[in-house]
Image 1 (cartoon, one colour):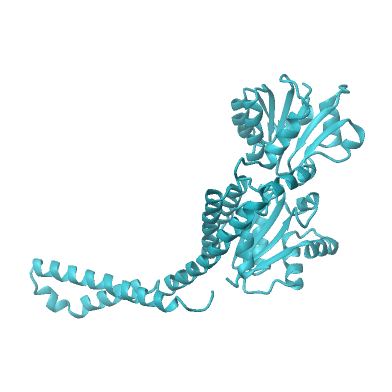
Image 2: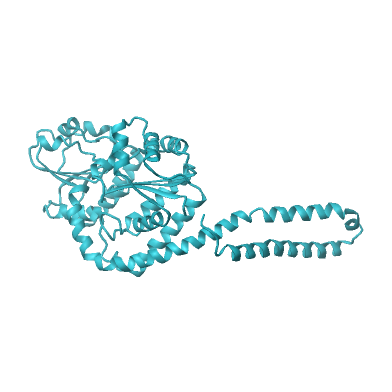
Length: 409
């Protein structure tokens, strides 16, 4: 596992607003990550971005030292200054070998999450892999690592109480909203129709809120969520022209810059002087910070939910040891998977070679074969097919037995 490296920025080590610097908009993912993979000379690459972490898993034989990190981050964002690059180098947490796998297992099992025990992270880990694979960034080793990671996370959730009475950033935000005694006829403006806002919308619908307007960059996606909520849908470009008023904004987009600018907020609020609620679960924040200086806003955001998250961690502390035992056992199990896979790759030429020998034998003994009757030929073909199968399986089994005590990959 010496080639598996992870470069991480999480809520534990980095200010949540700063983590937003590492977010990549969907439309730029392929071009930027392709560039990063090429410039950093990576064999494989995996990119995970959530509201409280950004993680890079790279397959490389290079040592991830300060020089490597400077090259890595200069390639990650070509517009970054030396100050930006130095910030990233100084704030990055680097894991390799067993520590890399342990960290990945911890992440998917929610042990490393802002809200320990939340299950959303396992879906985010899987979706990030699907995207990395779709973009041609990841390969066989990352595939195996993520597959095992998902299995470990499910094992943790099944055999411990870490996710008992599960909570999440969304559920914490909703609890905070309910504490404000919001009226049932409150007007909600929902900006973004991704997983986070869809989950929040389910909470709101369940508790019989009913006045919704949905904005999204892609109108079709806004319409899907609006239909579920029996609300109205508009493209995000129309947000600046919306004049129907609101009581609560729920926003979570993948934008790299503020979606709700002071100008747009001024247009949205109009002459209404009442205090508004904004639930901003985006990283970086969708709400421009300047708005808080000029308007009466009750802001519910990821960074001001951290205190509640700490209380959640304390209540689940006793389960962490059981989780860690499962994770440690699976680290050793994954090492065996890698050894077996190494054998499979090394032996992948055997079937091809055996078939070539069979074809050569057919050519060599063509004269003798031509004199055989049809029934004899069929029997011979069955014998050769049986021997071919055995000649492939026997060396594979022997090689696996030998590799059981071999060196790492």
